[in-house]
Length: 495
Image 1 (cartoon, one colour):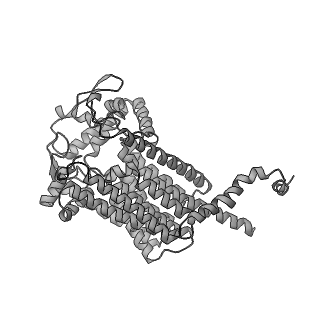
Image 2 (cartoon, rainbow, N blue to C red):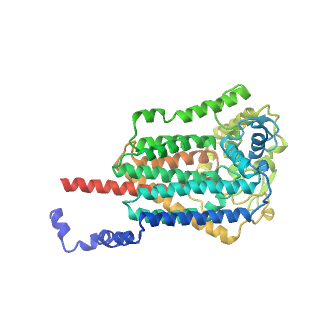
Image 3 (tube, one colour):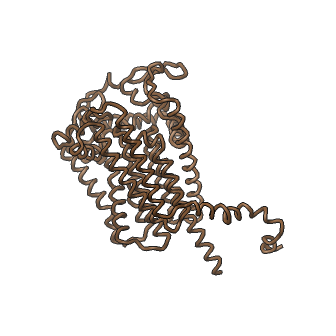
């Protein structure tokens, strides 16, 4: 029996019915539901305006309204104070329990940005948070509208963009981290979706066989600069930052000269940062001196025992923890016996060496710990860390049960989208193994973002930005797969 006879056989409708239903009923129905570009842009504007209003409400009704950014936690306060008062990156007492001075305990982008906002809006924590969220929402709005316009030929994906924007930018964990200014991820939850919406817009033009126009090259330049700048927000993001720079050049048809000069801003910034350290310390260093202690928190016997149950800051300031199992476990309490470090890089190198020594002497535990961190990063739906304090009875109840459940639901939904995207990307890459394949970069974005957190440690604030941008990657990936399918269909018709 030939394949043609089989397809025309009366018994085959049951085999092809699901595909026929999808093609003839579901897809046209979804396309009818999809608004035109103008209406879609209005809906996106409404969603982001609602998101901004929610963020402003949370800012104005949470915490001390008069608290100054000069008192910020995580070591940023002293750096911001020095920049604000003296225009210098030199700061003392940045690391908990240590009083040496340095210029590289924190990467410069976040302090420079917040000082610039403070010069306009005032040094109050809430004022800077409001200014930051207005600017970031404006950037998100521009990126979403630009992407929506690129989807003029794709009504189903316009509808998908609207639905995804509502899920992402009205989600509880997005709002929770976006209203903060205490850590780098409070910027990443906005900067990364903006990057990938614009990246997706350029890619849509590419698969639609449209050459990049003048405005598109401005967007491309912005993507290259944003990708370059993220390293100076968080130095552990070096591999991810490089991927953000190279990806637009790989998947878009751009002149050779542009490919050659695209990395120059990043290289020049690295030279500047290396010179800042050289002028102060007499040696070239290109990262943050805080990386040593942060790496240690993810590679030692104490963290192996208490992560993800306990906030790893407790290794620095506590002597004992009572685990949920009831077990009493000793902690190193580094505040009590820090050695007298002469400078920030000696501090960095000491903890970096301590981490490497533990990995070398306990390879089985280090491997087991890595597997646990992979599970936490890619699968754990609960808020990590589970506890902030060493004694369960002292744990503050900052979140209601309803908010915790809402967060778990949101995280779980985005994890489903995440794994769907990974599976589709692997399948697409297997079919077309080329450097310019979007699916390859889909996987590289995720891998380069996740790698530092698996080597070190991750909390929910580190995971949320990846779940947000991977959802946008999935939307773009379905466009890529659809275009590949249409091209194959055209080739078969020609034959």
